[in-house]
Length: 173
Image 1 (cartoon, rainbow, N blue to C red):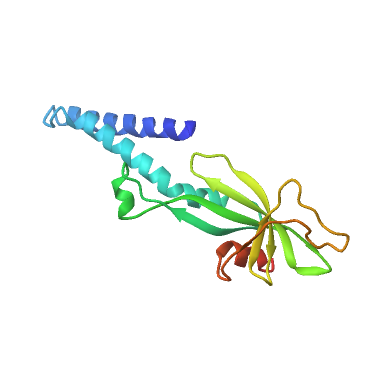
Image 2 (spheres, rainbow, N blue to C red; image 1 turned 180 degrees about the horizontal axis):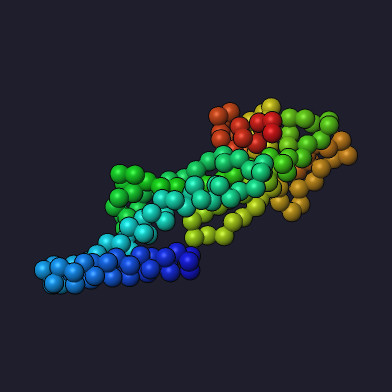
């Protein structure tokens, strides 16, 4: 966040200096308001570019075995251009290398979901998926597993068979 702020300020200063130098070369023929307007426009463009590039930059730095399962692109009233072209503000990735299964219950697996968000902390949450019955359960304190690997007291939530988290978590790595 700090580096993006510095980058935005540098873009504004560079644009202002460029227009100022151009105005000096033209011996003052450009309007005086063009320097601050160009600085503001450059800062706005730098911010928009940074926000639209965040998702691609973040996905490119994910470790091997992480697969993006779901993205959320939200328009915002204070960013009117997002109604025409929304950008990804958060997404969920499945860490397929963290998949844990039990030999007696091959249709059930525990995977780590990693929640990424623009301007938020990254969170890693273990989740239990039942691939055969299309359901999921949060792995929380108090969940118990039987001696045969069965889940004793999980609160299961039914999900659609096309749910992106379920399909990604149940896909073979």
